[in-house]
Length: 122
Image (cartoon, rainbow, N blue to C red):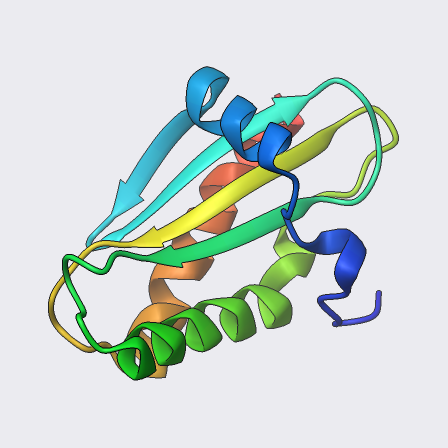
């Protein structure tokens, strides 16, 4: 499996994002929340990342956290099973005013991905 995060793995569609927040479920580990929707069709898993302006006024800080989230997902996306019958859409949202380091983000992301893997399999 290639450890890339290409265009087809990013959640970009407004329609898909709206469906995610209306029909999806969520789970949380510390300040990291993931909203997810498991579709019955196959394909690449798609993710998005977000950091609220309420917590970080500076765009530089928001973008740094989003880069950390994307990198952590990119390296650990192998924890999610790839199936022809299941398609996962997820949005990772960081909700804290404290600037995290990469190790902390990686730890939280791995925990959430392991729990998501259980949901995808069942």
